[in-house]
Image 1 (cartoon, rainbow, N blue to C red):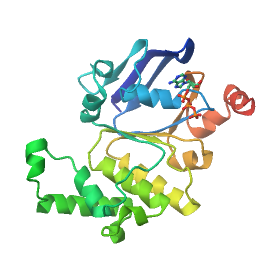
Image 2: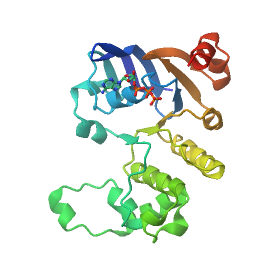
Image 3: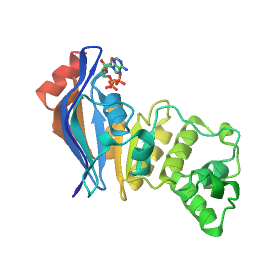
Length: 246
Ligand SMILES: Nc1ncnc2c1ncn2[C@@H]1O[C@H](COP(=O)(O)OP(=O)(O)OP(=O)(O)O)[C@@H](O)[C@H]1O
């Protein structure tokens, strides 16, 4: 599998504390990857670096077949490159319908002028229906998003990100606050999304990670401690020590 994202020798210091230490790893083009690690391991900071929110002191973040360095781009440019991020709390437009939320998220060539005169065409309508099907909200298209359950709001937000057709989707603790059935549905839709793009999931819930059936990267003190299948990394004595020693 060819590499989509390569983090190479990245370090970040906050107020004299090295939160990320010489971090290096790669994500393949259509790959599901889980990132785990104890509190403070650097998982959020890793996502902040990739999306341009935090600037590292050193290292490179190489992206795509042209091997461009993301560290030279601002946040908006990085998003345009096809990197989408899902934060832990859902941020949908609550007083708009599910349909409207998905429609306004579609990747269309919309500057401010075309936006003023924007009328959804047949292709957009079909795409919204496809996305609703993919996230399991076909029956809710005309409900206000504020009326959805917590899990449904999370799926809607994932759908809104998929509407942008990202090549890499970063997802922060998607299972938090979900019922078992909601977690299972979330696993299915993330696995489906990862067939055509890279999906990186930061998650504390090991059962959820197990169901993703993917390679796992364990971070500890800002570096990669172990990498491989969940069984492989959780039988690593260093990983066990880091988790039990919390
Ligand atoms: N803006 C900041 N200023 C100072 N220290 C920070 C800042 N952001 C993160 N840190 C520190 O950097 C380290 C890594 O934090 P980070 O949030 O990336 O860890 P994490 O693995 O996401 O943890 P958690 O699982 O608790 O979310 C922590 O020690 C944290 O306190």
